[in-house]
Length: 209
Image 1 (cartoon, rainbow, N blue to C red):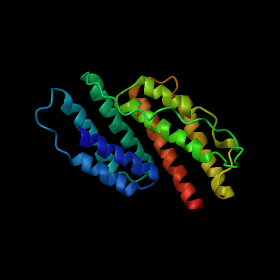
Image 2 (cartoon, one colour):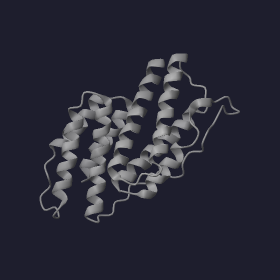
Image 3 (tube, one colour):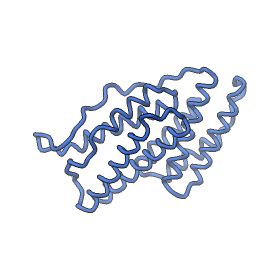
Image 4 (cartoon, rainbow, N blue to C red):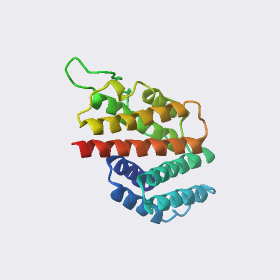
């Protein structure tokens, strides 16, 4: 199981960094893994679902489909853990970074700290799906529903600044939608959209740099 989660987590991180090619390669490796012998009854159904989602992601033509496949593969992990009463606890990243709204006294626009909050929340959403954990899911949304980057100055050009702010606002809107959602499938859909928005924002920042 460890290799599957490692490959899936790699695919998630590669996607967010904008390395879609490597993300697809990680998912392809995941899809090709054989089902381990001697697993308890019922595991094979979930592993098959995970492999199918990984295969879908490895063949995806766009980042949105790739992100959705990563999220739904994670959802298969959580569904399996819950169905078979196998408790899994991913490492907790510690306290959430302090929220930032507006320029700091030091002159730092606060973007880096704001993005640290996003990364923290993305990790907790991941735990919410994989463990699965309602607490982790709720913690992530508490961070993502804090003020967005509408008042923060961005270190990119004017056009890119508007696009990055729009992508960031999209993440916060999605978080609002997820506050009252307790359905694992729609949570996974939301997580896929968050990953896609993160990836597009990072791509815009690279282009602006």
